[in-house]
Image 1 (cartoon, rainbow, N blue to C red):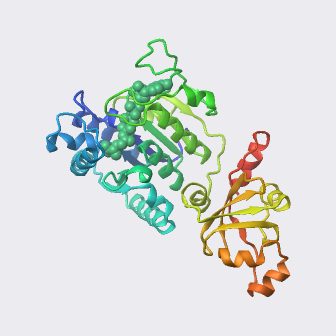
Image 2: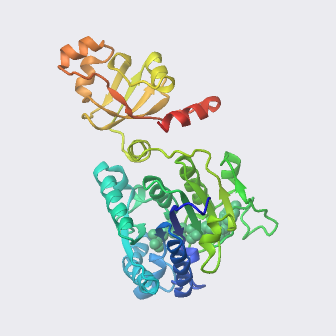
Length: 386
Ligand SMILES: Nc1ncnc2c1ncn2[C@@H]1O[C@H](COP(=O)(O)OP(=O)(O)O)[C@@H](O)[C@H]1O
Ligand SMILES: N[C@@H](CCC(=O)OP(=O)(O)O)C(=O)O
């Protein structure tokens, strides 16, 4: 992380770093985080906060003796606590001349293109106006498959779509160890990780505390996604007002994950790759697969062998080869019905049957390769960055 440059930084603060020993919100800890966020702002960086802590801030007001475990209990606590959390942030931010702006998101918001762009527009405007966006899951509606599961993944998705330079995940442990340091006092820490291999993923366990949810495992998944989007990641802890500045200058107490790819995936392709729901699936022959994966070409109807699902032009479909391997996803220019009429046909036939001028079924600009062969991973990475 190069601290001289003005960075766009997403800082995620987990419940474990915001709570007192009984699981409630700790104002003292919150105030220390705010001092550090304010120092980042003073140094000229753009800052977006993803903060957990709603359940922690709310459960005592509802009469729960400890952090609730049921979904309804957590939702009710979050509904009460979210307001208290933002109020606490704003009271503290005021003394630095800063103001927070609450944004609650669900995964569903990311899968609908208009919502994705709306959220991006609002966040960019807030940043332009000097506000500090404070993002959390929309706990009351985010249930089951709609949830991000945890704010770690949400912070990586937000960092991706805002094309942030850095993602800083603050937690109660000073980084990733080769075993959970809570249960293994001999665990060894990683200070720098250049690639998140399956072996590294296997070392990260679940939450060791009663208040956190994802543990180190969800942080590693989030770090992996952020790295693939061209974002540097830090996972760790710190104290004092300079802790975030120290993290930027490489002096943080934690693990740095260095990004190998400097060009982040464009927002449009990120949306297709990570958020859009697929409305159908098409199969393509070997020639079309070759053109899509290795030649940087668009998909033409002539290479399509099978069409499944009911989709309309502009929706996102999965593209597989004839043995069923997923090659990637793309925005389709035809409905399923139209495609049935022209699959396997030449450009001339498409024009004649459908009266279209441009015939690509999926244009290159709306295509994302998802299939990676171990030995040509890099080639694919470069390709999806186009
Ligand atoms: N390999 C590991 N290295 C470090 N911490 C680990 C590891 N495996 C599991 N953990 C646990 O992850 C916890 C942090 O995650 P979590 O409790 O979800 O915090 P947060 O509330 O900040 O999201 C640590 O307290 C630790 O017990
Ligand atoms: N949205 C919930 C927190 C969920 C969550 O991810 O917690 P954590 O693992 O502590 O970051 C809340 O505000 O309490």
